[in-house]
Length: 369
Image (cartoon, rainbow, N blue to C red):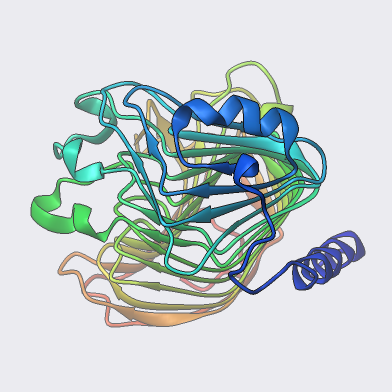
């Protein structure tokens, strides 16, 4: 299922991570420790082993970490971001062969409760939290992200990057259903990415893949949101911008969420393709709407009921998917394909407890529904 290229990437990343210091005594001089926002520029220009300790970031400002090749950044204590209604991101990290990690007890606090209005992107302007633009075998590990105002971690133009051991906690947004559009991981314009051993508690997609190649996602624990998702086809001009290929989810759990697996293509976008995507050993529990939901009918962000084959879904493998539903209108499986839009699938889905029967249209003939 996994390419030699991906296996090599994972092995290299884990070997590199094992070489990082694991103790909390950091051999970094005071001149390479950032404790006030005004120090950021000078420290980044002169240091490659950097500590960010107890930092307050002013409202409306990005903590811009453009790192020298091979740099290491360690977050200590509480990094808190002032409140302002703007687009963000609150942090942007970029560089080649970089290491970014969190010391024991650290937290990156976006103060989401100061923004949430129950309307998400349609309400007051809220900043995205963390944008990553990293390459060259970079490893980001052990980050604790708390209360994102909106989308939490965006990977954009990443190349050979590993994220491991993230804890994304936006569960406070469940109160009065105020948190919306708090995606855990969004992946676009990236390739050779590994995300593993991470926890996401939020109110939107645990993972949303928009445009990517050679991505491995494993041992994720997702709760409260919309599940493990692909959302493909929003560009109206470029087939390349509407392509997801060689993306593999494995050994993940999705609990107390609206959906387990959600694949949607945008019928108002340009041509594209979803090819060689797999979901393997995915455990579901407490799913309210759909266990597996695959639709080729999204326009302007909403399903229309009229599917189009502008973005065919081929080589899809959904195997070893099991679990239970709870919602009063729940369906274990909902598939809406266009003529010729869905081909060459593998299928092994066993989901119980749905209150309504499955509903499938023009799925491949071997897909039981």
